[in-house]
Length: 108
Image 1 (cartoon, rainbow, N blue to C red):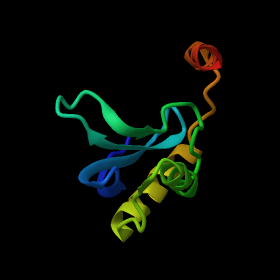
Image 2 (image 1 turned 180 degrees about the vertical axis):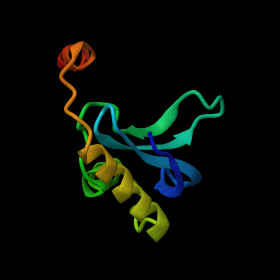
Image 3 (image 1 turned 45 degrees about the horizontal axis):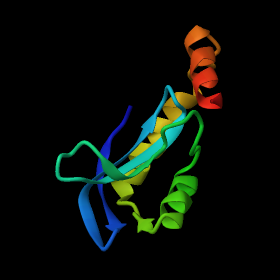
């Protein structure tokens, strides 16, 4: 799983320590921002389901629909995310018992 620090704007402010990345087991891009005081809860956490956001553009659209923005991405982060996604393209499909279990959990 990759994790890169970016700035997310929204919620009446900005979070310069937000995290964007790619999760190979879930085959999705994710975004986490605006933790509460305890650090246990996030105001924004996208990309927790299998293939939820297969592109950064889809992730960006979802963030914007919730009142948050993170574009434009720094060029180095955009290149690293593309590289992370490309590495996942050569992995074999996930069709074992764990994949079936995850699909079962997500169907509920």
